[in-house]
Image (cartoon, rainbow, N blue to C red; front, side, top):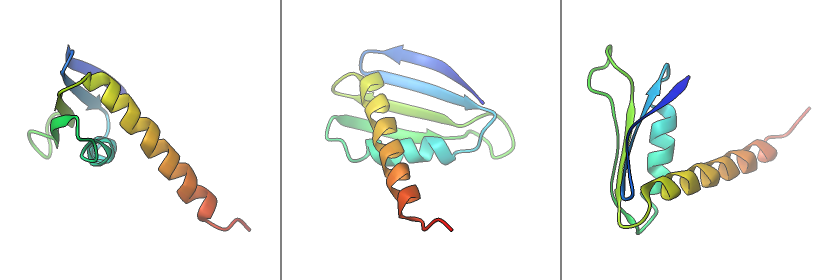
Length: 88
């Protein structure tokens, strides 16, 4: 997996996720939708068989900071879920 920054401006961020499906961009998107500072967020892929998924974020604050915060929140939820699964 490689992450390629397509656009990195103060209130706008576009990230391409090479070598992966839309699962991670969709997870980040779902967390970003909870923020009142996000004006627009989308996880897209131009064609099902071509290209790589992209996360597009437009915000009233630092888009990059909001994405990093969303990733941290998603990681915490995954850890909670993992600890809820009984171990043998």
